[in-house]
Amino acid sequence: MELGAAHWIYLAGIVVIIAVMITRRNIVIPAVAATFFTAWAFTGDIVKGMQSIFGASLTAAAELFNIFLIIALVTALLGALKALGADQRMIEPFRAVMRNGHTSFWVIAGVTYVISLFFWPTPAVPLIGAILLPVAIRAGLPALGAGLAVAIAGQGMALSSDYVMQVAPGLSATAAGTSTSLVADRSLVLSLVVGGIALVLGYFMIRRTIVAPSVDNLLRWEGKALSPALSLPRTEEVTATATAGAGDLAAATGGGGTGTFTDPVESSGPEGMGDPGETGGQGGLGAAPAGRSKAFAVIVPLAFLALVGYMLLGKFTDLVPETIGGEAAALVGGVAAILLLFATAVTDGRRALETCAEHVIDGLVFSVKAMGIVLPIAGFFFIGSENFAGRIMFLPEGAKAPDFLFEVVNAAKDGIPHNSFLIAFAILAIGMITGLDGSGFAGLPLTGSLSGALGPTVGMDPATLAAIGQMGCVWSGGGVLIAWSSLIAVAGFARVNVLDLARAGFVPVVAGLAVATTLAVIVF
Image (cartoon, rainbow, N blue to C red; front, side, top):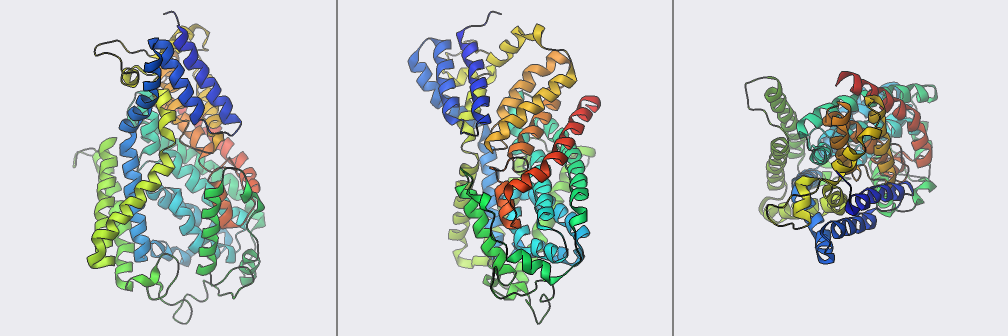
C-alpha cells in the first residue's frame, strides 16, 4: 500500500526517539509529540490529535496495569518483611560458605540472582550490600569483583528474563503481538546464556586480584569514600538510595569509615552480634520477636519455591493446570498479597489494618515511580499497531485502524535483507541503543513492535526476536553496561567507581549477548 503522511511521521518519531536516547535524554516529550502529530495527520483533525495524547497513555495504562499491580504487591511484601526483620535472615545462612574470595563471587552471584528473580534487583542490592558484601570483602574478594557479580546476576541475568513477575516479557509480547509465556521462556534461556558467559569471563578477569582472607581487607574497604562518579546527571534518586544503603552497610558491619569496627564474621556468635532477632539494626530486626522473624525467613522463600514448582508442574505435566501470561502474574501477586497479610498481622497485631494499607500504598507509589514513565512511551508505539490505534485515536466503531509500523515495514520489505542473522543483530543493537537512557524497559515496546513486524519477513518467530531485543534493552539500560543507570546503586554499595564497574562488565556482557543472539537464530 502507499504510505501516507502519518506513516512517515510515525517513522520519523521512532528515529527521533532513538536519537534522543543516544544523547541520554528523556524521551517522553518526543513520544508525546510524535503521538500527537501521527494522530493529527491520520485523522486530519487537530482535536483528535490532542485527544490521542491522552488516549495513548490511557490505552497503555489499561494494558499494563497488571504489571504495576504486581510490582506494588511484591514491593509491599518486602516492606512487611523488612519491618519483621525477615529480609536479612533470608540470606543469613549463605555466610557460612563464603570462606574465600572465589566462593564468595559465586555465592553473591547466586543469591543475587535468586532474590532479583522474585523481587527484582531493587531490594536485592541493599540486602546483598548490607549483609553479604562485607563478608565477601573480608574473604578476599575485591570490591570491583563483588559489584560485577551483583550487577551481572541481578541487573542483567535476572532482570533480562524477569521470568517470575514477567513484566519485561509482557511488554515485549504485547508490542510484538505474541505470547507472553513464549517470550518469557526464550528470554530465560537467552538470559542464562548471556549471564553464564558474562559471569565466567568476569570471574577470570578479577580472579588474580582475589587476596587471602583478612580483617584488613574489610577495614581498607570501609575506609573508602563513596565513588565521586555518583554525581552523574539524572541520578539524584539512585544516589540517595546508594548513600542510604552505605549507611545501612556501616551499621550492619559495626561501623563505617573511621568509626569502631566489628568483624561481621568473627562477631556473629553469642558474644558478638548475637541473634539478629534480638538486636536492633537495619531492617527493623529488633522490632519483632526472633521466632516470628525466623519463621517468615523460611516461609517466604518456601512459598515462592512452591509457586515455581507449581508453575513447572503445569508446564511439564498434566497434574495441575498450566499457568501462563497473566495467570502466572496473578498467581505471584496473590501469593505476595497473602504473605503480606500474614506478615503484617504477625508484626503489628491490631495495627495490621493500617500498616498493611501503608505497605500497599508504598508499593503503588514505587511502581508508579518505576514504571509510570513507560506509559506515554508505550502509548506512542501502541499507536503503530492496529490492535490499539483505533482506541487511541477514538476512531468510530467499525472503522479500520491503521497498522503504521507493519505497513512501513511491508512497504520496505524488498529492501530488507532476508537474513535472519542480520535482522536478529539489528534488533539486538536497537535494544541496546534504547537502553542508553538508563531505563531497561522503556525500549521494549519498540523492539517488540519491530519484532512483530520484521519476524515474518525473514521467517523468524516474533517471540524470538522480541526476546533478543529484550536482552539488548535490559542488559544495556537495566544496570550493567550504562553508568548512569541503576548500576550506580551497585557501585555505591560496593564502594567502587561506577565507570570502572561499567567498563569491567562491557566485554563479558557484549560477548554473552553475541553468543546468545547467534544461538537464538540457530536453535529457535
